[in-house]
Amino acid sequence: MKFFQTILMSLAMIAVAMTSHAQMVKEVNTRVLTLEGAKTIAAAAAVEAQKHHVGGSIAVVDEGGHLLYLERWDGTFPASAPVATAKARTAAIFRFETQVFEHAIKNGRNALTAVPELLPLEGGIPIIVDGHVIGAVGVSGTASSTQDVEFAKAAIAGIK
Amino acid sequence: MKRLLTDIVRHGALACFCFTIFGTQTFAQAQVREKHILTLEGAEQIAAVAEQSAKTHGAKVVIAVVDDGGNLILLRRLDDTQVASVNVAIDKARTASIYRRPSKDFEDQVTSGRVSAMALHGAVALQGGIPITFHGKVIGAIGVSGETPKIDEDIAIAGATAAQSFKARSSDGS
Image (cartoon, rainbow over all chains, first blue to last red; front, side):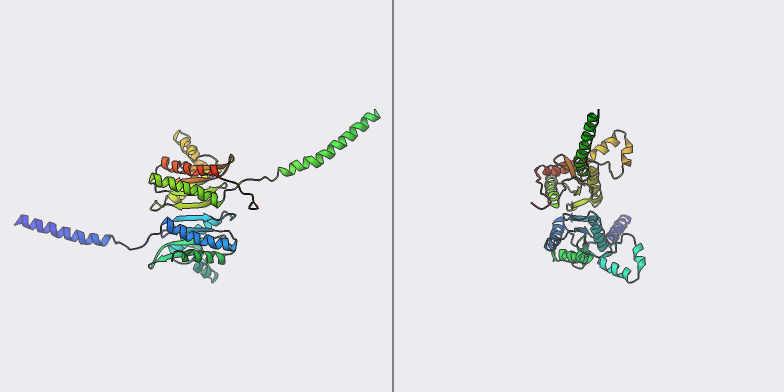
């Protein structure tokens, strides 16, 4: 009888353990951006740059804000590369277009300049697939920040 | 005597005149010089060869190409590579470019006791950064990170050799 009780107890504990384990890890069906995908995105922006005869840099980051791909077009000032990267990173980890932050500060919310890892310059746009932010694009160094945004949008349209 | 003095003055004046015309031209030429710069197309060729080498090794790496100022021109992170390798690859590339030598040189220095090599500004003492040269001049560098130091450097060396078939284009596009 005692032996039987022990077995029952063990089975009960295993059952409980399995149930609680199922709650500790959750599988999220989210797409992950590949290098090929990033190259396609950048190529769409490169086409725009050639069309408008301007320079610039484009950065593609993953959902953690880490660089997947970057290219700086010929003749562009070197700082456009880290700026494009920072715009992309901001868009990815805050899950907003960086234009939102630039406008918010312009409208008076200056405290946003103190937020760590936030570059409040327009030109960064999140990449959203199936409702999830899977990465972001950042463009810097074109003829204007407005054009940065245009090229970023063209880049993202390249994956839809 | 008077004839000698006249000759000296005349020759001296001629010498000064020639120096002014030709000498200052020489000085003016020394103020600005030409150099070859790595284009995006060149960086892409380097990265393509490195990517091919990475696939041969089955390696998951980040490939970074910088210009002669150590500034990023191109970066590619192969699928499923650890994210930390992004910054490491850039650091290795910058080191090789601005110090004009493989970044392994500094790792070797540290290993053989010269720990102060780690204090060098803008350098990382890590194997995997290789300069890109054209006609004997360093025009940039490639940095690779993600696998073992030896494999990283092998991939970087493979990429850098692509520069051997580089062609120059003059600034007016011809």
